[in-house]
Amino acid sequence: MEGVLGDLNQLLAHFIRAQLTLAALSMLVYTAFMASMRVPYALVLGTAGGIMEFIPVVGPLVAALLIIGVALLMSYPHWLVLLVFLGGWRMVQDYVISPRIMGRSMELHPLAAIFGVLAGGEIAGVLGIYLSIPVMASLRIVWRRWRLYAENPLNEYSFGTELTPRT
Image (cartoon, rainbow, N blue to C red):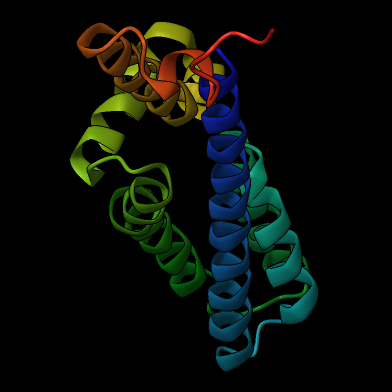
């Protein structure tokens, strides 16, 4: 059990690191694109979009509405290009970048990550989408530890590093 908990602790650290990486990447892409298109308040909007990446499904939608809303209120003439960019970036982020980063940090194949997110969304909605990758990785950890135990019940993975009883 100690080994499983240690592995789960590492898994959670990798998951948080992957989420931070995705949020930072989104912030950079949002800010760079909006600054190159001369969108008003590009730095603030890019930062807000990056921060909202932590909220599954709803966060990117709120970020897009905020960016488009500010662009329209500031009479930005190219709001349609901005809307196309936000939709395109969302597709690239969800189907290319996120599965690769999450898959690498959680040691899951990108295709398994995509199917896991889709299954999580069908089973538990927004919460299922957010928790599907950590749950899949946790199940993989438990399965690996169980297989090690089944192969040799008295190995160090089963009972820690101590094999002989204390006197």
